[in-house]
Length: 313
Image 1: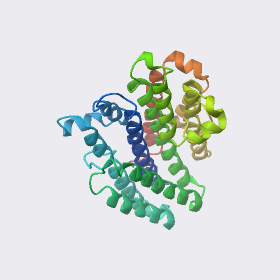
Image 2 (image 1 turned 180 degrees about the vertical axis):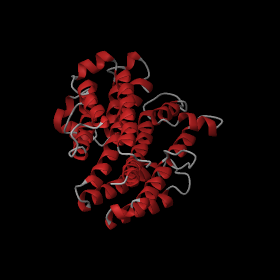
Image 3 (image 1 turned 135 degrees about the vertical axis):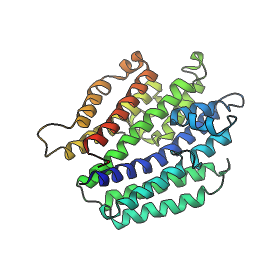
């Protein structure tokens, strides 16, 4: 496969996943902010920091506001990672690799683009925000379903999956960091009803509430939630699940080589370094420090994939 085609497939799936995940970060901020005292405008700076778009926001806005932060993350074209920008970039990449994807996948992406163009053509009111978030998730699920249901299981599919799970792992890590490091009011709140409500919001933001209750019942707390979102191999947005799928698809791509690619080596190192310990070891190390190290390693994987598969040749 040409590196340019692999690049288009990889980034098409990353941008599609990013659009959904940015919406999930907005939901997380909205839900957690409701549990806080005071106006909480500055708390949205924390959400922007987690999304990696704080600097861009500050360059474009004179003051921090909830409305400004939500609009920046959902629809501002100056933000390359906004939902609107991500969907547009996904469609551009899909157009570039039009002959490599099925007609059904292209139609689903195009329909999502048209729907987002309509939904995000103007500022989203707080009243309409839940419905818009739901619509974004449903459109992402539609494209994902078409990929699963119509694409051949070959190197094209592998690049789509690699982009998806790399982006998803990055997002789950960022959502965890929002709660534990940035939005926790004080040490005295740990274990309180406020703390528990915020952890519940984190579960809901990754659509994991039902699965968590099935596994742990009503008694699960922060320790179990962290284990579920980081180490559980059956939870489809956990770091362990995403990195496992990333490794599997990279092994398929590497099947004809005598030695593993450098990017595959990094993924296997992530598994042994970050995902082979228990949750107590993660807390002892420091959850924020663990998440930051994980994000750095995921970024290293992405850069190495571009090199290994000659994306720009």
